[in-house]
Amino acid sequence: MIRFRLSQQHLNRLESCPRQFQHADLEGSISPKSSDLEERIAWGERFHLLMQQRELGLPIAALMAEEPQLEEAFRGLMAAAPELFQPPERGGIWRDAEHHRRLSFGEYLLVAVYDLLIAGEKEAQIIDWKTYPRPKDRTALANNWQTRLYLYLLVETSDYSPEQVSMTYWFVRSSRKSPPEKATFSYDRQTHRKTEQDLRNLCDRLGDDLNRYERGEPFPQVDEASGMCRSCPFARRCDRAPETDRGSADETALPRGISDIKEIPI
Ligand code: SF4
Image (cartoon, rainbow, N blue to C red):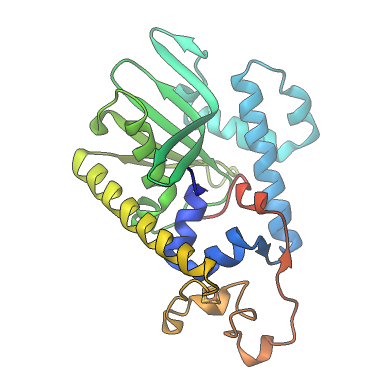
């Protein structure tokens, strides 16, 4: 029996602080978002919709006409990466937007949704749209569970070898001064084995934490010295908020589906 469905967001939370996973994913609580963040998430969702509609051959002119910034980002991406705008099927290449992959992994189901998968006979590329500027820290991007899980799942659920797959993030929110930028990650057997081992370790630890949680024990907390609690929305609940913030609003109960928000900044 599958005990939990794990996305990259769950894995990131489990790795950084298991107690955060407890609050956000088991108990369905999250902090209210600032209106600025709400707007950025909504913009990201509209961009994803635009790209999905284009891939399906549906009209996109009306969407772009409503929002010049959307059109600007779309045209900027087209100019920077014309290869991404090829017809859906050509010469043995197959493309699919919002492509779902899942894999049973012990008691868990690993899940991913690729914004775009471009699959040929000998290689496959996972494409992910990001609507914020490219992070400077490439290592953090490589180590993020989105990169690791997405590549792992593609290899495990296809005939491609690790060396035949790659993942590219396109940071699309451009202006004339800053065109879209990309970050591409290749893959290999050694990285694949390491990812598998890390997934096993994380899932084993989750199993133990879930068993203890069912007996009434909370999930472990990150070391306070890490500094992570200072910016965590659950700091009050964990009794780790700075004195000055103790009177501010706490997190609000929301449905579990909140973890399926399309795009969380890495
Ligand atoms: S406040 Fe600290 S311990 Fe609590 S969930 Fe956030 S990061 Fe984890």
